[in-house]
Amino acid sequence: MRYMVTYDMMETLRNTNQWLGATAEAMASYPAFAMWPNPAMTWLAAWGSVTERAFERMAVKPDWGIHSITCEDGRDHLVNIRTEISRPFGDLIHFEIAGRTPAPRKVLLVAPMSGHYATLLRSTVRSLLPDCEVYVTDWHNARDIPVSEGKFDVEDYTLYLVDFMRHLGPDTHVIAVCQPAPLTLAATAYLAEEDPEAQPRSLTLIGGPIDPDATPTDVTDFGHRVTMGQLEQSMIQQVGFKYTGVGRKVYPGLLQLTSFISMNADRHSKAFVDQIGRVARGEASDHDAHNRFYDEYLAVMDMPAEFYLSTVERIFKNSEIAKNAFTVAGKPVDIGKITTVAVKTVEGDKDDISAPGQCIAALDLCTGLPDNKKASHLEPGAGHYGIFAGKSWRNNIRPLVLEFIDANSDTPPAATQIRAV
Image (cartoon, rainbow, N blue to C red):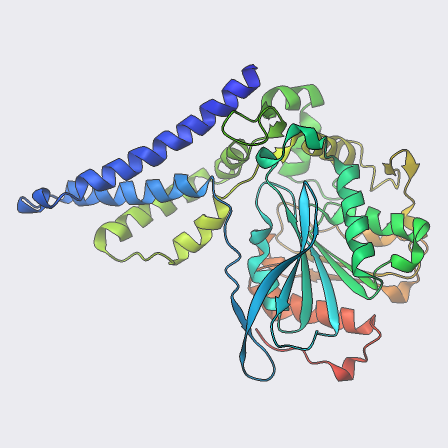
């Protein structure tokens, strides 16, 4: 019960700060105050506006915001988001482009379940849509999932991916970004043994911790410093009475956000102080650079407790994927069974979350795969975010990934064209 009280206390603090921001903005904006101009009232209204927006965004799932895309015919086509498979903990969604012949490249983009919603990959999706049929794993906020739906750990996550790959068929090209890279590799190996005909054509792993010990970072060091008991006591709470998942044990999004911000507290503080100044001067807008970034960054989701704990224990502490010792429902998953799926790894030279060396370790694990089906790329000067959503992705990595897809597809490369984004 004490875990539920803690959860509700965090939600109360969030709600209170949102209310304080709205109240400050409303009070400081009274016309009567304009009779005696005072910079303090202008600043208070600006503070209230920024504060209300920030704390409101923490409890809201962002919209994908992808309404249309310009295709090779030069016309804008509407984008419809259709649910292909609906599951309690996550859906498989398809970005269906109205009036366009299905693109020859079918891509499954595996989004992380690591605090933020799948919409974190919005720019990645948008960049792929002109050239690909894009499917995305859209994970649900654990606070909204009833306890009656049961647990969800790394094995369940892997089996979800197996089912999604089976549904899409063997002409699929899978791209896994960050956290899901090890489990996507395991899901592919699982299919290689259990249902070889359902394996994807290619697998691209971007900035994922296949072997977290290959190049230690603050993230991997933290996983080794704390015990599982300490993690469970300090990080796990129960969803409060406000949400459908009341009683479910989770790693709360608000607690995750506190950790995210504390890593770069000075930079975030300066960003908000600067934004308050811009609002006070009338220089801010609803979709300016600050709001575009923080509307997504602050939108966090609760993670199932068993998924978080099993990820730390099995992927980081025990290195089950790196040691090729991962099991699903008691059945060993041998990554060496992958013999036909082309595998490419992408790393950023300046990645401080999944450092160079962690992801490329996947190629050594694929002992049954010939060298001509292995590829790797190290992007100079790129950080973690840049390798899947920034300038490095748009200008360098995306074309390389599409070329890799074409090289391992039934569609001749000459019949397709990579458009600039």
